[in-house]
Length: 540
Image 1: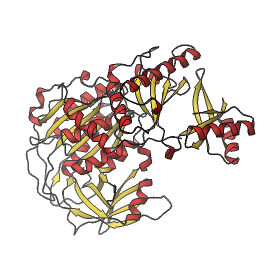
Image 2: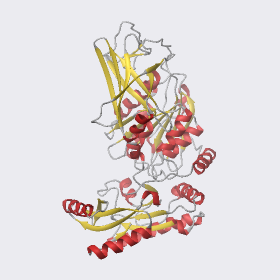
Image 3: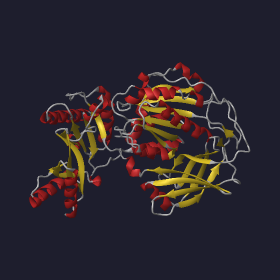
Image 4: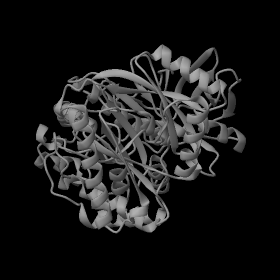
């Protein structure tokens, strides 16, 4: 099995600073967001829900009935403090600001393992002076995978208006292979000059959100960042989720994420959100702009009207949270017990499943100019690390007969390798492999975007510390047979797993042995295994 390895910080910072100079882009459309909120809210007042009221209402006699955890900042690096955002409200949805400690006693509850008792810590409230003012950036994925949601996104952003006031400022960025500034940081009352259309979010190429986030943090300096995406981030070649977290925490920026559909992997964005003070939402229904609008409304409300608290925890507890945990906030007062919990993924889940360097037109090996920034960025990392090898992997799918697809995949991977060499990458740093139609992202592709994502060149870092080399020892049509064979190899003392592939347009399974640091180690093991067990072995 494989894992990504991050670029050197110096290279990363150079990429970001270069982007600040280059990609301040052409402004395209954005929603009209008029003034709605003017009132100053005193502590313990209630904010009316729904938001149709022009002013919040206050009712000092109301009592707490609901507790909602709206943002989490887990420990990161050497920090051992957990910070949370939460709202306390009544049954009608009114939010009580700064609930008095004499009425409710708050505590933090952390569970790193379902069978272990939770760790409890008193929560120290941070008193708010009133409504938080937004300096907000909306980072919308501009890849082909998110394009199917472009109408849904445009409608939801156009309806964001009632939830902002005159002191809020907003910018919109499209995260493409290079970030594009759709709307500069603009007062909410002036945004009507940037009308939004579906074409604003038309998708091209692969997603590169992590890079766009870092560019936003350095260029626009928001207090709040909302990511909207319907795609995996396939372009995490020089910026990883941990980089986004590090820079966001330094800048004091809270990040919320909205993942659209059921296919995009949410774990990297859950990691980013829950380590910067935000939260991750999933909106599953295609075309349901109201659900996206509701998520945006809750995020704005969460930032503006939430209470905040912090709890210091022991270093050993903080370390255990990296394996994933359940974070809870509990409020006790008299006979009342209120609580809300949030499950966070392990830090390892933030590692990208695959990294794509280019997509291709059908039956073509020509690299679109859209992907040149990705090639430039990868080449910069490799030039700074001349001893670091990578493997380029070519794919083709439903583009002719199998032999033709293997040749097409090989042509694509050679084209990418040549492009990297012309950018100063040493030939010894590049290992090439063409797998043809074996590993499509979408075996049953139904859209143009899905077909294009199957026509790609990926890369992976070949770091001996990651044991990147694997051996293929068997193929099966039956998953049951493949699992039985996997068990046999494990009983022989090997690290084995099964991988689903496509052979002749049919699902199949292959058994792989993993754990080899170098190509030489893998070749030696392959010869030994082939001789001892009389099987055909290939190195990957």
